Length: 320
Ligand SMILES: [Zn+2]
Image 1 (tube, protein in one colour):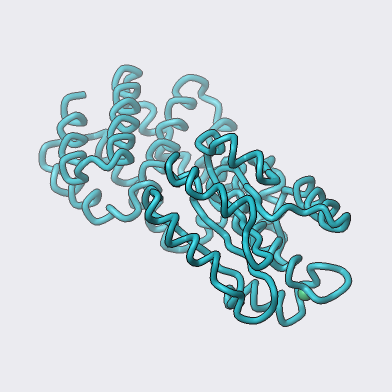
Image 2 (tube, protein in one colour):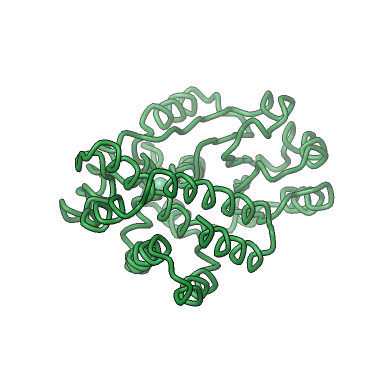
C-alpha cells in the first residue's frame, strides 16, 4: 500500500467517505510541493481499483500496477506551463476516451493551479459530469487560484507541513542513519519530499558545492568572478535547490550572528563554516546579500533571462 506520511487525518477522512459510498467524482488535493499530494492521489486510485475487501490492499494486480504507474486507466497529466482553453480541449478529449480495461478511470492533474481562469471555466462541465465513471483528482499548491465554481464541485483535501519529528521518524523507519535523519528532518521544513530529495547523493554534492560558493561570494574578489558565474551556469536546472540552500545558510548565519546559539543552526553539519562566515559578514552586508538573493530568485521564477539575472546577481554581490 502506498504510504501517505503524516497526513493521517486526511487519509482517514477519505477512507471513511469512501466506505460510506459518498466519494465525489472530482477532488482537489492542496498543499506545498513535496508534502505527499501525488502519493495520496495514487493511493486514492488504488482504493478505487482494488478488488480486495480491505481497500487498498497494496498487493493485488491493480494496486501493484498503480503503484508502478503502469495501469492503463490511471492517467497522469503534468503541465509545465499555464493551461488555457485549447489545452483543456485536449484534456477533455483524454477524459472522454473509453477506459481500456474496465468501466472506470482516474485522471490525476498535477499543477492544476496552472489552469487559467478561462481554462477553468471550460473545464467546469467535464468536472460536473465526467464520462465513463471517471474520477478527476487535481493537485494544487495554491488553492486560491482555483475558482469557487470549481471548488464547489470537488471534495477537497488539504495537506499541511508536518512536525519535523514525524519526518525524522519516517526517515529512521526507512533505514536512514540517526545523524542524517536529524539533519535532514531539521532542513525539511516539515515536508517529506524535501527530506527525500536530500537523501540523493547528487543533492549532497550540490549542497557542498553551494556552501563553498557561498564562502566565495562572501569573501568576494574579482578573480573569483568566473568561478561563481560558472557555478550558476552549470546549475541552471537546479537553481531552485541552489537558492533554497543559499537562503538556508544565510538564515543560519544570521541567527548565529544574533544569538551565538548553535542550537538554532539547521545546517548542523556545516557549523564551522557558518560560524566563520558569521564573523566575516557585517549585519549590513548580510541583509543586503539576503535581499539580492531573494530578488534574483524571484526574477528567475518570473522567467527573466537566466544569464542576465545571474550577471545582475554577480554585479550586485560585488557592490555590497
Ligand atoms: Zn488491491
